Amino acid sequence: MLRFIGERALHAAVVVILAAIGAFFLMEAVPGDSAASAVGPGATEEQYQLAREELGLDDPVSTRFGNWAGDIVQGDLGNSLIPPNQSVGEMIGNALPVTMQLAFTAIILSLAIAVPVAVWSAYRRGGIFDQVASIVAFAFISVPSFVAGLLLIYLFVFNHSLAQQVILGAAVVIGLAVALSPIGKRGGRGAPGVMWGRALIGGLVVGGVLALIALLLPEFPRQGFVPIAEGLGDNLRSIALPALTLALMEVAIFTRVLRTDMISTLQQDFVLSARAKGMPTGHVLVSEALRPSTVSIVTLAGISLGRLIGGTVVVERLFNLPGMGSMIVDAVQNDNLPVVLGGVIVIAIFYVLVNTAVDITYALIDPRIRRG
Image 1 (cartoon, rainbow, N blue to C red):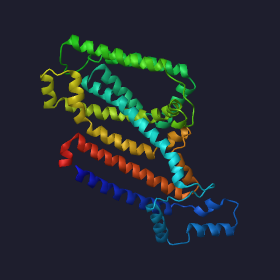
Image 2 (cartoon, one colour):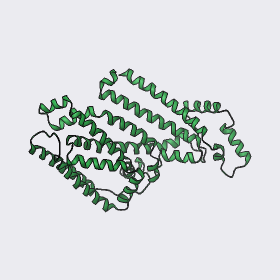
Image 3 (tube, rainbow, N blue to C red):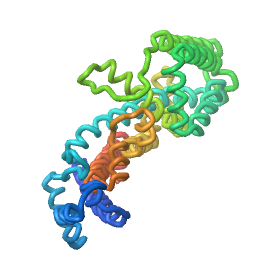
Image 4 (cartoon, rainbow, N blue to C red):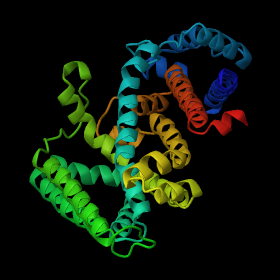
């Protein structure tokens, strides 16, 4: 196992180095003048030339890359070219926690919804709940994130009572779908009375939880971010709608993938053997079938987390969040090269770390991977 982890760590280091090199030379190829951005539009020719000299823009590209790489190795990401010339490390330190919390919250929320929905859809394949879940999943996939964000703002910010009514309606629909899930199910097992009883209890539980959420639904701010240090409740309210905006599409993708894997796993001999031994349905679904079905969703979750860390620009802009996406976009617009490069490197590091963690998780889930 240690050798497996060491190999993945080496691969991660190589990818980060290549990403840093690619980012530097890509930014060199982008039109723009960092010296002009540093001195501003009202600067004299002497000030402009002095800025070029201080930034080393007259040096060969290889020299500039060597100086930049040496600073990076020492942990110095440089300073912003735009007044007040704040340290890039400090800027990233302020922006990264916002994006990280947004991405992790979206992934956790997605998995919390997708896993039970996918497991029940696979178990009641072809039933009412499975059909409703499929329709909703395809609807979520087809809605762009900025449209979903605007709809959530309209509902939860400007029409709080309407949002409560929508959730109550969803509670009724989903509760009925769970309760009626045995209808149309192919390959049902067990006594009909037991199947209907379990489905009815599940429908009441799911519907009751959603109804309770509707009744206790808090009011959400239109935009802005509240740090955790200023209050956990305010922090969660400020991040809830952006995270839900990102989570909707992830929920749909996770649900479809895990449902497909679960259907295949439920047909395996070891699962059929567990059923034949009379093991409870919950044990069969969670302990026997869920774990070997999670390899694909672990992959997707890792890729999605890395993508969200570097790709939340639209949502951050929509909700006015001071995250990494907003910081990098502003830096690109202002030719603020040190900020762009620092942000890209940090995102690359986290993306590689996430994917390395996914590879290690594979080995924990399925020992055959690390033996191979």
